[in-house]
Image (cartoon, rainbow, N blue to C red):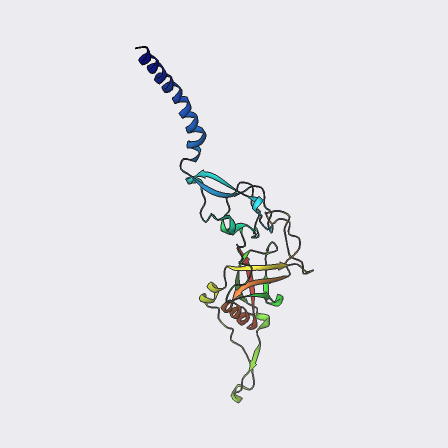
Amino acid sequence: MILKKILRIWLFAVVILAGPLLLIVWTKWVEPTWGTIDVIQASKEIKRGQIIQKTDLKVEKIKAEQIVSERIVDPTIIIGEEALRTIFTNEQIVKDMLGLDELIPGSGEANMPVPNEWVLSVPGSLLRGDHISLTPVLDKTKISTGTSRNALDDDEEKEKEPVLVSEGDLNELIDIPVSYSKSGNNQEVTTEDDGRQKPSGAVKSLEIVVTENQRKLIIKYGSEGYKFLITYR
């Protein structure tokens, strides 16, 4: 009888103690990881143009509903890449933040300087790593004139018909990476902040990464009296 009584007291004590113990285990170890996913975040602020190191990253568990799309799950993809914008502390690392070697010409691509005389307008805040669109705009001052070979025309000069810009060509000349944005002293244009409010100089020359077809189109329109209106995202 005494043994049974001791056993009951012991079991009762275990039940009483188990409640708070289970609550501690739940709140400290189970609940924080319940329904969470490991994500790669910046352990500190990473400046634009900085090469990302292992110490700049950390892995944290966050709720599934807080994850962002296109996040990178493999840290080896991130390490050694260039930050295309300032990445703030605790931000999840996504593809758009990184160069991911897109500024290095791949197969079928080339680095192409854009002649200054072919540029109509370029944003002063344009930086390396931006993606631009080129819109050909006819420069009427560059249109050449031709002389008719027909004697009946009395050798009157006629305006040369300009090459028409097709919608297909416009769609081709978009989303082009800027490999360099240089100022008048041939130095890369940078900015003191992430808001592009203080560029280090005015853009005087551009180099872009293009496919062979994009290169041909740029030469085609530049040679036919067009200038390019440059916009970026």
